[in-house]
Figure 1: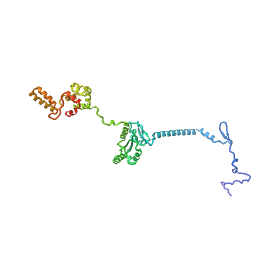
Figure 2: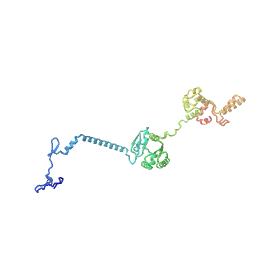
Figure 3: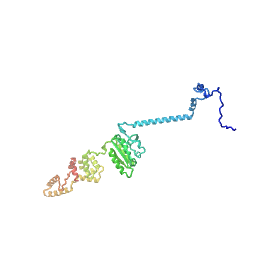
Figure 4: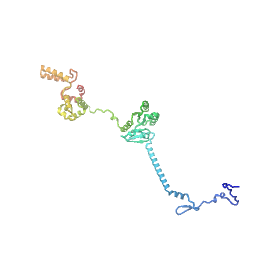
Length: 368
């Protein structure tokens, strides 16, 4: 009979007097005694190595030291990132009362972190800007904000602007919707946005390029705190001087030349009494201007009326003599109206100057 070499052999039978080791009580198995040496190292009586001894051997390896260094560096970086995030949240955290309203005047344009990568930011060069965690896309000053929207994006996401406007609430005095018209057929989109802005108390501003949109944001930020005097009509503080300049402009003298004349001669009487050579010394006064200005002071205002008066004087002087003719000329000059219905001006320099000083040039200038 052939025996299988791989068959399990049965253990030999044990006598009742022998007790197997497994059946011995646990208390009979004593743990190995640990001996502590003078150099703070421990060892067992049976020669086995303890865990502390094995770990000390691992600590001395270069690989373990490098791993510890990398872990400590990563922990420091994580702590620094957490501290920076807490500081950013503390700066951007606002109470329910103000709700994303910057009460202090801002010297820079505040840009939301949502606008990172927007093409208009590369065109903002005249004012500084910084990224902040806030509800509006842009904050220009203390009580002015703006939401940015392109027509193409609105076509893909029609409800986007409604959600963004609901987040603003009513915390800003001026709420601008800056729309970038980047669609060729945007008439329906603009019509909807126009009605939407009217309902939501928004001011819609259209920009046809990214550069134009950037200019609007820069202007809003630069004009923060300025009053409306820059765009208001300036009041006339020197009405008499403007009347003199208007009177002199009738003689082909512009306002710059009129200012030069007034600066040199001080008053209209001195200008009328000046000779042509004296007028030519004024800066900007050429021969043609001097001739026209001199004629304006020394020629009658109405040539037709002067011709009629001259003809009447010649006829009367032949009959009554020179004395009567002179009296007739004086009475004719004092007549309020001539035959042509025009009110003649004075032919003397003194009367012209008096008329200017009394602010009566408006009616006389119409007869020039």
